[in-house]
Length: 318
Length: 318
Image (cartoon, rainbow over all chains, first blue to last red; front, top):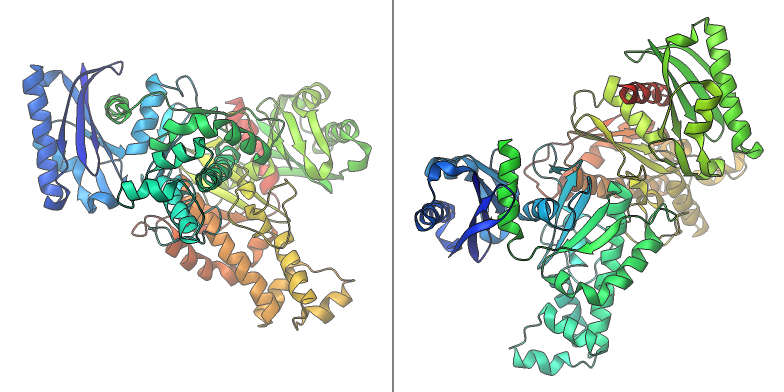
């Protein structure tokens, strides 16, 4: 038996045929035609399924279910409340895609799907309770409790990036609140912080570097600068690390998990801040004699979304 | 069959014989001789069990298990990591009390026990997922997920009072961090805030009222003053309410529960702030179209600790 895993993102729809045990046997992707609206995007998703089956020469009857990770919040039945960066609100993704493909469709947040992948094959394998933190443009979360996905009573839980952890003088969160975790610990947070420091006239190797990039600061650039000892880059990385520790300590005090896994683009640089992070978390957790939650970079790379979505479909199909 | 529920507090040990369905048939309490140390206190607990059985004329064999709620963090097997206000660290409560009473003993945090009681008989009955928030001297939490107690991988989870939610200029938390939720939303937080305002020279009916009470500000006094329109009292209650909303919105974004129940001394005044609280939470939650988590004052009074501990023992005895 096979499962299809799909990862619906702001720039591309990635899909894969995945075996029972989480191996991808075939992959394909399409551009996400965001501006065309949800019906066109769902049509493209259905096409992608069809093309994959044709090209892989797999019998459609061998596909047991279809999982889709979305950049937003969805209900158990596949109703998408919203997905901000693809401009969807109240889209019947589960129902529509199920009709188009004649498969049962299971939808959840993309960070949840990555959490499932890590729990199936990666760094949180064998952990009953774990939290997956994606550090990318924003900060997302996927929670596994008692070896099962936890996403709340209505599918809108584990929005850990919108846990308020302080006051942010730089900017308000897109959600309308001030002080959400992701405004301190994310790519966007780091870039805004760097821009403020540069505007305040701080000297930095960033100044010339971003001229070469037409004014764009990437998190890679910030980590490179920090590794070279640039003060502005170090200030930015250190504040991000400190707030990452604040939020992770909160999650440990709340969930007391075996593992907290870090994924997303920033986690690729976690070797640079991991030791500091662990020391700061140890200082902050409530039961200091029980510093037992492992903090680890995620193991699976870009395919985590596909694998996780497929394995989520598998778990839902029973 | 009966269960014994015990509520170990800083001033008293309360115990009750409880039926299968959560009715208390006999109650008794003793002073907690905190300064005598944990062995004496555990002896007193065992004596209390013995006396209850004698006085109730119940056959000890009809007792199926003993649950104990403690003001601290404990492991599944009854090992108490610490309980600050009775000065316990690393106490083998489960093992010792089990030997002394010849019963199986099940230990958990007192807020968890209150959460179990509310889930069995109270305001969170029938809710698969709920969070119980005790607003007393500090702020504690009990979490029910999928109709079961959730307390983490090592019994140190759901310490929601130590979720950092901002910067607190008044005082640091006893846990060593600054900005824990309980430093904004608890009796202690309200009293510290009131003292600061009075020291800053703010006029208030508190000034004469606390002279009558030898300088002691009670939360009751603060709510009475707020009901009478006193500016200082209103400022204190409003800030507490605002931060209560910040933390509750965080919990909704994380757990997406059906119900958040408010217990503890301050919840007795929740009629005064409940409407404001609900409006502030509605503004702050991430999925604003899904303002579906009920926020309710707890139903059970002082007996929640006993009932919950007994029902926890029942759930653990299977």
